[in-house]
Image (cartoon, rainbow, N blue to C red; front, side, top):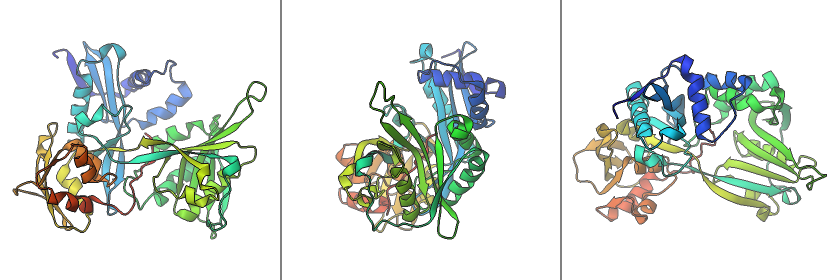
Length: 406
């Protein structure tokens, strides 16, 4: 398309790009100035792109500088891709492809081996090499069935915080306790500025509770927002929505859950983006009181630099497997890789399995087994005996979890 131009955005163009993005999500109102003052802090020089048709901004994409914990505990630089949108009257013209190609090339030059995102639609991003790498639960617990078992860890204390105290405390606390699981990502200052825009101290409905252990050290937090129906026209029910709950361990997480489930005048608690192995069902006396309402996508991963990403993660105990990787967008990644307990390296050996870059992204954090994807017809199996070994190599002790929207 001769009149299509994709380039980095100037600071003066950030607001227009933001409004284009939110309009693509069908928000009809302009972002209020106070919220924009926080949202603009997410924009980093050189990380926002615009697609221009005839000199007019028609599409945009950006990324936040972040990091991703991978199996084995290594933390790699990673780009959190967000703000992706195309104007409604400019779709189906190759703008998204041009934006994604430019962004991936830029990330490659930056030396960031991984890109990640949350997908608005599951059919969009596999063609750019992204694979669904982790999943989460949406849970609901009725107050009448929210009693916790006596064996659940107790101790420490929980306090409400807000305003400047919360904005100073939470970034440091999260950075300190959000470790030990593949899929956890870094939250930069711009992320926090936007995330805390709707707290009670800023005129919103979100409240914050922080947990301290027996020694007084903070080791967890929860963000929650009550929503009440009008008792005159409705039933007066109160739903408490948990949007973020992170604990340094089971005791911290259980204390935060106990606090929210014990709120007075509450009818139901609904929590989004919860890890698949959270033991809430087992903490409750009536385990059926915790309903899994939905299994959601969590993090989508794109290996920008396949050799670096594969070399960084740990592998299970099994004989090596040779995997052919196909990557039409970033052809330097294409080739055969010998994956074994000692690591992953390029090789010239005959491949036993073959897959596209998006499927490698899906496998990378260990959420899905190669045999599952092979059963779905997504992995080409050239030596069936290699499939069981691949399952053991890619397996992880804990399911991955991101739990951070961006």
